[in-house]
Amino acid sequence: MKPRLFSGIQPSGNLHLGNYFGMLKNAAKLQNKYQSIFCIVDLHAITIKQDPETLRKNTLQTAKHFLASGIDPEKSILFIQSSVSEHAELCWILNTLTKTAEMERMTQFKDKARKNKQNINLGLMSYPVLMAADILLYDTAIVPVGQDQSQHLELARILAKRFNKQYRKKVFTIPKPLIKKRIQGSRLMGLDDPTKKMSKSAPSPNNYIALNDPPKLAAQKIMRATTDSGDQIKTGQKKPGITNLLSIYSLLTHTDGATLEKKFQNKGYGQFKKELSQVVSQFLANYQKKFQKIDDNSAAQILAQGAKKAKEIASQKIIQVKKIVGLA
Ligand code: TYM
Image (cartoon, rainbow, N blue to C red; front, side, top):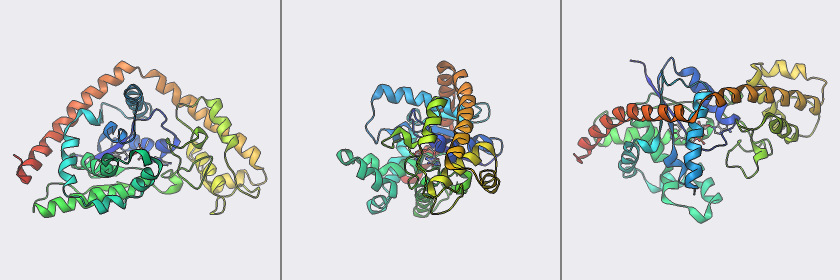
């Protein structure tokens, strides 16, 4: 048996280059080495107010992004979180082992609470516990994610150990995060503010290159991206804008940073951005060709089959957990 891999994405129509390099691309590569399970986490998504019709549409779109990125349903399981009710069940049980103070400390909770003052709901706080449930239900060994998820992964490890200790049984596997280095794309920064991560919920669409952006629009976003003082194309702490653009260039062309710095040695920001915008447009055109080939019906079918397979595994785990806790 291959060790198991689990990862998830919130259903948003605006998946971006950060999601692609932070997770999707690595996941597609890892499918051969691990028994892989990918989840579209719609229960997580409703912690922020959603329009029901848009959520439904975005859930299917997200499935198509997984497939366009190379997730192969013959090798991996792809499903929607809410269609396997064991996720919510285990989340409740794990909630009872989680301290509220632990949750209040979570960076993303604090950040989201600041941005959604009108709707600081309990789901938003318990969000990382649901994520732990996602992972622990499947005896997951490894979780490929971007850097922003490392605190959540740590909680999943803590809860797994806490449960095992409290019930004196090795029920849950302790999952390991797989977070690549920054230059390998684990934290792409916003184009309009390179001091913060690229984010699909950013106030301006100029923050990110969406995987579905028309290539022309994406090129404009690159040309408008915030740069730093000076005119050198070089990475460095004082050059967060150029560093971020260089890493996007490097990821898209498989060229290392030093080679790129040399290539653009005596060229200005304008020339560099122009070449990068061509590289980005080309990538998007190719990606979107793959995306468009996937029709809604076959994506829906893959999700239904995936849910069946996921449920088979998750229901076994929940039966075991309920017995141990005294619920069955
Ligand atoms: P989400 O939907 O915000 O993001 C999906 C994946 O993309 C990564 N990512 C980034 N990587 C690099 N640079 C960025 N700017 C960037 N922005 C996002 C994220 O790290 C993530 O890997 N809570 C999770 C979803 C989730 C999950 C899980 C993940 C729910 N349950 C269980 C793993 C295992 C989230 O909101 O991801």
